[in-house]
Amino acid sequence: MTKEGSLEAPTRDPIAWRDDDFYDAEKIDAEMRRVFDICHGCRRCFNLCESFPRLFDLVDASPNEVEGVKSEDFASVVDACTLCDMCFMTKCPYVPPHPFHLDFPHLMLRYRAAEAKKGKKDFTARQLAEMDRNGRLARIASPVINWASSRNNALTRPLMESTIRVDADAPLPKFHTRTFVAADRADPQTPNEAAPAFGARKAALFATCFVNYNKPTTGLAARAVLNHIGVETKVSYPGCCGMPFLEQGDLARVAEQAKKVAKALVAEIDAGYDIVALTASCGLMLKFEWPLVLPENEDVKKLAAATFDIDEYVVDVAKKNGLPEGLSALPEGVTVHLACHARAQNMGPKAAEMLRLIPDTPVDVIERCSGHGGTFGVLKGTHELAVKVGKPVFRTAVKQGRGHIASDCPLAAQHIVAQAEKLAADEDKQIARTPEHPIEIFARAYGLLEA
Image (cartoon, rainbow, N blue to C red; front, top):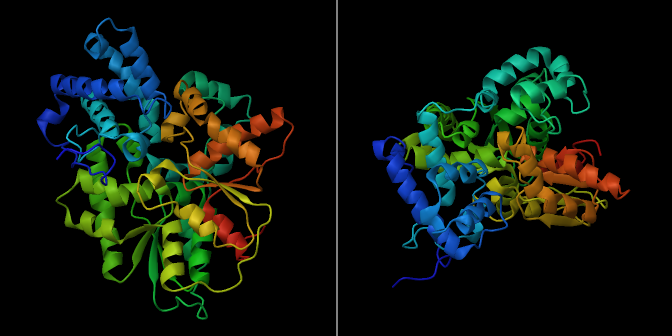
């Protein structure tokens, strides 16, 4: 019996990136027309992102609905997709196992993969995706690079916009001379013997490229919290998860990273460690995307089953082992943005659940895409779309007016704070000016970070 969609858990097919048919232009075009016709008849996703308004405008302007839209015009729909997965996870009633078998984000990924195979690659996006190379080089001259990349630098940012198309208004991550991995080695910690979880849990922190090179504070906060609640920790970083390459359709590079990183992390699992990812996008890759890219790889399967996001892990320890006392109220409150790549994992709002363990602390939730999406939120042309999509989030953050703004996605947090600051200034309001990860706020409540 055929049921209306969304009554069963969504499922996904493995990504057939090694098959020639996956890149066949005619077959891609036929599938896009099939899917777009279903979307046109439904329109439930009209307000999720810019892809759907663009699609519906194309169809409405056509004399013959989807059939009359030119194939070359589909590119504008693909370009506006950030692969946030929210249409697949929260809106679409026709995802598998529904017979329509509609997976809009992975269709956009397939189109990009075919374009990349033809050699149509964006140079700047391609270079920005080389996270490990960039991080290793940038740490050598981080003060100079951070000066040049500052949004307040009226000399370098307009030049960057005109030459490499990095939008002058987009905040860029800072780099650090000492990475999270180096900081951990220089100052090893031991777990709290008085905590209920002492001796029961061990966690290998997958540093992630962003935390390792751009936000070591998040990693240090995660390590401090886990040690305090009794979890033995070590830091492991075999390399980037490949999300920046996934966004560009370079699935071979994703597979390459998956094989290398999974092999290294499985060694940690065999030694009794849980794997804890420090950003939502990396957690999504390890748990869900890698098994679709390499469904036959046993290391990938084993890793997916043993991986937690950091918020998810703290909540799990709290439920199964208990937490030590000592959490102090943060009466200024928290606005927590539920990152799309955390929501796409279908694990529940773990960031909010963790923060609500802090007594007498208001926790407001924003459950909507910030619009950022990796290089999408940085490059000229798409940065404007990222701001447009995220406006409801920025307005909500200003209205809530809490003392902290946090997200499991560090780029989303940075994007939200930067844009909310503008709105707050226009309305003569004060908001939090430092983008945070929820684990940093939890560390503050335990007195492990300065307030």
